[in-house]
Image 1 (tube, rainbow, N blue to C red):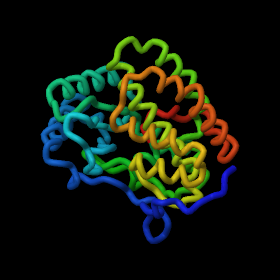
Image 2 (image 1 turned 30 degrees about the vertical axis):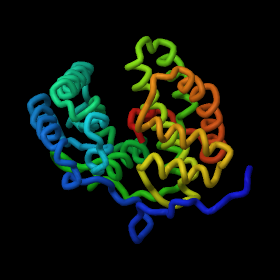
Image 3 (image 1 turned 180 degrees about the vertical axis):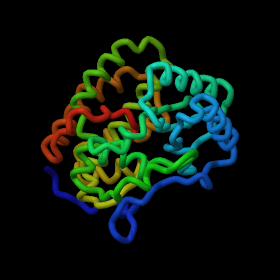
Image 4 (image 1 turned 45 degrees about the vertical axis):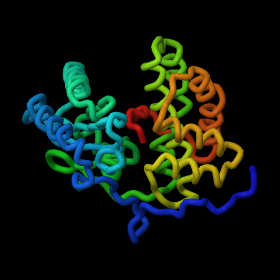
Length: 282
């Protein structure tokens, strides 16, 4: 391994006790996206009624970094009981309707769980952490009140992104069936972001901080793995401004992804079986 250098981005994102601070707030939502969020809030209530325990925003909109016409609206919902296939289909249709109605967004990402799953021991350092640190409460009783504080340690790294090897075959299948530029562009954006985030959490415990900025994540990784710096910087750029280039996707699943999965298993181990298989964009 190349000699380690001082990361150009100073560690941040922690409180005085070394816990990851919750990112995002309703107050940071840029003005153009407020009507979208208001519509989503009302329609989620209409769809699930008293079964809805809580609803959250995540991603660039509550962080205040969303770009008009390019950013997703990302929602996580927790039901009081376990969601059904009909629930998931209803939420998917709600997202499609919002996407068509509001040109400010370029898609809607939705995650749907039962409250008990999000608070379970199995999800404590994966979806539990995701809710407590990366989600902004929109409706209901905040589940973060029932979850611990989290540090950027190896356990968190393993349980959030230690399943990359299991994901690669799925990605190869999706790439093989991507039959339009729109589909390939969305795959480039999704996989680019996922790989950059996974690369960051690989070295997160050594850096001892947290960021959700793809550019900063790439620079942190570059300090510890300069041999992969160029690939990660390119992936971070494509996470914001993707292309439909099939060659990019093949490089991800044939080179960068396998290297990252092997290095992750060597450093942190493999994610505990049985949890959510990278359904969040962490």
